Amino acid sequence: MIITGASSGIGRELLKIFASNGHFVIAVARRREKLEEIKKEFNEKVEIFCKDMSKLGDIAELYEEIKELNIEVDLLINNAGTGEYGFFYETDMKSHMKTLNLNIKGLTYLTRIFAEDMIKKKQGGIINVASTASFQSGGPLMGVYYASKAYVLSLTEALVEEMEYRGVRIMALCPGPTSTEFKGMSSKRKGMQKFYVTTPRQVAESCYRDYFKGKNICIPGLLNKIIIFITRFIPRKVQRKMVRKIQEKKKRLL
Ligand SMILES: NC(=O)c1ccc[n+]([C@@H]2O[C@H](COP(=O)([O-])OP(=O)(O)OC[C@H]3O[C@@H](n4cnc5c(N)ncnc54)[C@H](OP(=O)(O)O)[C@@H]3O)[C@@H](O)[C@H]2O)c1
Picture 1 (tube, rainbow, N blue to C red):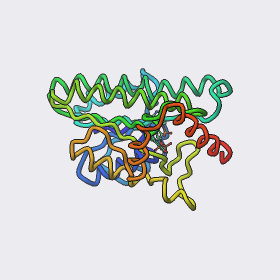
Picture 2: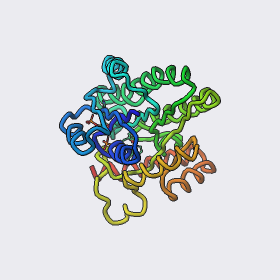
Picture 3: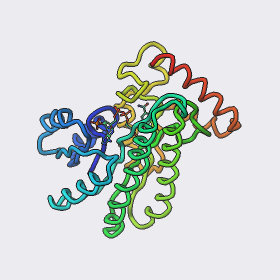
Picture 4: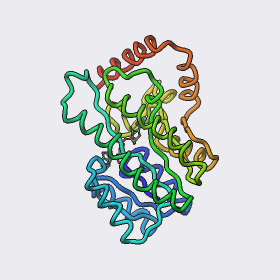
């Protein structure tokens, strides 16, 4: 199996859970030193690939190198993702493009290559990491990120209908705020954050459990599930004003 963005946060916890349950994991990220730490810890259970998943050339290389090693990929977890805070018109254009290239283009390309192989074999699985942001009507101050995660959820749900009846399992993992290196998040949960910020371990455990239960959408944490349920009954105009208030608060903390 492959996990992108396995060098920290949710990806690293997913790697720990899958590797300790006997899965052979191909860990992909850019920071070599982080990947080497992982290799030391998990030895033959893990193979590391230092690649940039926002670059289509790196993705094509990854695919070729895996083929050359004769490794069968039974599960692909598209976890690597990024996002930028700030007003759309003030944020550097380059960081918007980086978000689109990783969260949308890279994810689509990698999914497409492995989907074809899985369909041929009539087996395999794909987990795409979306977000609770995917369900919101818009994400003021993080507009490109929210839109990219809406894309991930939409594509993943389409693939459920196209691929599951042909033997390939598909799931969207939709975490809420999680204590990782992700921008604006702290790796430590302080004060009230203990109630609404999940740990990467909790997210990875929910993902593992729900994938093998056959779920198509995994929302880790009871509070996140309740929020997403209630969101259905809130007018879109109100939703985006609420998100703006939350994001403005975050911006003051950055
Ligand atoms: N934390 C949250 O609150 C939250 C909530 C909902 C969804 N998510 C989603 O969860 C996923 C994981 O995020 P996280 O919170 O665990 O953040 P994180 O700790 O920052 O981890 C991101 C991972 O992605 C890798 N990565 C970033 N850019 C990459 C690139 N161009 N090519 C290859 N790997 C790349 C990073 O490794 P390198 O830097 O070594 O490349 C790192 O391993 C993301 O898709 C994020 O959108 C996070």
